[in-house]
Image (tube, rainbow, N blue to C red):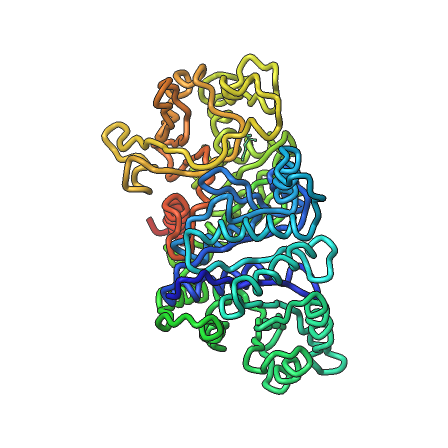
Length: 553
Ligand code: GLN
């Protein structure tokens, strides 16, 4: 590997949502498998300092890193495709963060009386951030958020243009992802939008080296040559980015068209050919599952798929390790609130994910009661765990008005409460418990391994958090006495204060709640232990159901 750091910049044209994140992640995966130490960076062109305060309905899920950084959901894709990179807040930044840094420096007199301008001060700050992000690796794949032509992304594009000059053309590759639509009426793939988008890039001084053309079919050679000719790119650097049914197939298709080889050639990096056997195996398992199970995800009807991206991926991974296809049905908790538990009868497992706000809460609690009393495998994550504790407190521990301080600030029986240390903090951004914390697992309960221990196979784990509220220690004893087992806790080294991290029910096929978000750590090649165990229990349960239906056993 050359000493010089290498950069691959991925821009997008024509439309948003054509899969730039997956494209960047796939390039990262292929180069890593060639033996290169890669990292990934996302630059987002909006003014929020981070996406933590943005509605997930607008922007998709907030992906949390170990260091507590709240990032864009693309960091989730990167984490799932790339195995060895350790991402920190350096790997994701927004225009807001850049301006914030520049304005702070200006206020502190850091510009020595100069006029502070977009070029060079903002662009310098962007380059500084990029160079810092690549410190721990040899190569960075950098995704530029937004679409070429947007006013917002101009400073980022100008910065990467300068990077090519400063770092040397042999160390920088520009990849541009565009759309090549098939127009049925003409029976033709249309290249004009791509031509326009590249023209726009070239006007600001960026000549792409590689074009990835998103299309519903493979591009024939003559179409690639035509695009190449009009865009000043050689035809063998124009690649099809064909629609796929499963995102993990994307790097395999790229590799079949020699994308990684061409990029390696351009950058003068000669690792070996990538070993994709493990990855292909995983893709094959998704393609040809041995069985199908159905998980009911109980949430607010306004929640949409992208706000649970990591969750749905983690369920797919749990399926991979159990040779199962996980069919996910989204169940509106308000319908259950209105008494319609019929919806729950057709699912093999119930999952209540993380969330904020009061809406639909009672429906989720009803769904949990159903899972508990009907022996349906249940997995509660963050808010889902808090509600499982409330359900148990109300129905099993006699705390009839049990609730969470998030919804009932004045209740006397708030089994979920704000952390004592946080009660005086009023700043919205400041009160969340964010990032990785250690969790001590209880290995046995009544002589038998706990579900938590059976899943992880060890006693000390670390998981990522994003929440304000906790299980209150005031009511813990009463609840534990009635049989809810605290199988994971975080113990503060200095104060000895315990925070509940996991709860479970011993006499249930599988009923577990966790305060953290395990979905952030799940990868297709390393499915998360809890998702693995949950889906296993669901598969076992659905077999039992099958047997019952057939009158055997
Ligand atoms: N709203 C809850 C809290 O703040 C749960 C958060 C979550 O599920 N991520 O504690």
